[in-house]
Every structure is written in C-alpha cells, then in structure tokens.
Length: 211
Image (cartoon, rainbow, N blue to C red):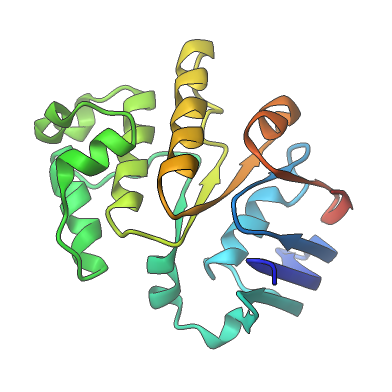
C-alpha cells in the first residue's frame, strides 16, 4: 500500500485549473515531485496535509481518504516545511518548543536542532538574526519537534547557494536514514530529485507525466 495515493485529482484556483486529473502513488521513504515552475508541484504538497483541498478525485493517506482526517491532527503527522521560512518572533528554541506543544510533546531543542544540522547553541539566537539557510534549518527543526510520520519539503534549497544547498541535501539524506520518517520533496531541480529520492514523479501542467 502506498503512503499517499492520488487518483484523478482536480483542483481549481482563481478560475485556473492547477491540477488536472493527477494520478500518482507516493511510497514510504524519500520521494520527489519535480517539474517546471507553475506545474502544480507545491499544490500537490499542500494537498497532502490539507492546506488545500481538491475539487474532485481522491487523495488517500495509508489507505484512508484524506478528507476523513481532522486537518490539525493530520498536520501533526504530515508536517510541511514551506519554501519561504515563516518563523515566529523570538528565539529558535521558542519556535521549536511551540511546535512541540502543538503536538502535545516535550521538545528536546538541542536534539531537534542537531537533527536539522544546527548546533544546539542556535537555540538562544533571535530568528531575525539568522541567515536564510539557518532559518530554513530552524523551520526543519520546528517540524521535527512534532515527531511527524511524514515531512513535506517545498523547494528546501531554492534560496541557497551551492555549498549551503549541498549541506541541506546531506541533512535530508541523514534524516531519511536515521529517523522513522518519510520525506516528500518538491523541487524544480531534476538532478536534486534524482540524488535524493527513491521515486521521482514529474509533473507538467497539473498532470503526472512520468514516474
């Protein structure tokens, strides 16, 4: 049974068809959704934790219709790290602790920062003083604090330079190897998709054209 099963998914936004009869099966492990800008990749990611809902078709998570899940409960299991960092004002530690509280968990801030590739000393730093790459890793630590079953990563390296991009890719690979978590990655970089993922789903104009 696939982790996610998308069948005939149609989604319209602002009078435009964003997803047009999309069929895709996403297994456990690391999968990538690749394709050009405007193809519907990020919309698929938002469907998977009900930040967007389809107009017709089906999305199933571990065999269960996604619409049967309470959205907030689902997002604790299927956690999205958006393309643009959106940290709360305050310290890195307060962001990680807040996310853990939402999932009724106790945060081990140092552990989650280390998992995301940040030194535990970053916990005391003000988020406003972080670089873009550091903010992205803080967002990842915040997601990990909820101990999700699935991590959804939307273009996690698009704003980074070459060295930082490779470091984040190494972190993703390490997480997949060490934690009991599946990862669904959206990227426009087909090389990155092939480096990181066991399955790559290519999307164009709202349809899956290759797997």
